[in-house]
Image 1 (cartoon, rainbow, N blue to C red):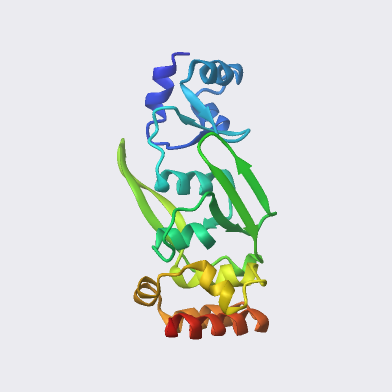
Image 2 (cartoon, helix red, strand yellow):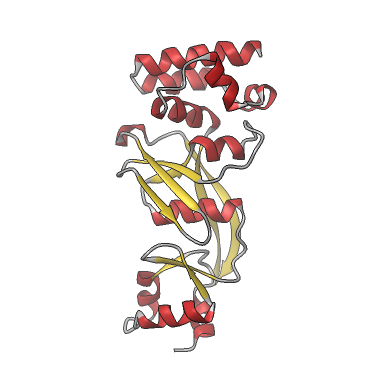
Length: 213
């Protein structure tokens, strides 16, 4: 099989799996993947997923990869805070929430962390258009990321140790960005859906802190 032929057929994929290849070439031999890795044609993300080595690695690409390698997940927590400019620095890992098991993946492209929440709490995220690909017909490749309000709720739900003013200061939130991009009524509504009084109490304390900062 000619590598360039496969690459052309998968040009609509930012990340692909062995199963994606076998849909095109049912008799594909997985040994080719090791050969292509050694040649520097592709990069292994996990046991099942790969990207082409000339793929541009930026924040959006990493978000798309994070969604793909662990189903039933979306970007949230610190990665979402960075995306919305709530915190001043880039994060060292791409953080997501999932209804599956807590899990981490480390690869050449990045470090991916998944924190578990209940399946009924997988709401409040948007599909963001990452790229427009023309492949027979035009289509969009979106990634899933928590809305600002949901990212905050997820964070306080999963980090019960964040509860004091010193803890809030260490988050280094940009108050102006936060208050501009966050719908406070939606935040309260989402928080209520968690049915967790301790989390709501800590969140209210944080809101008082951020409003007076």
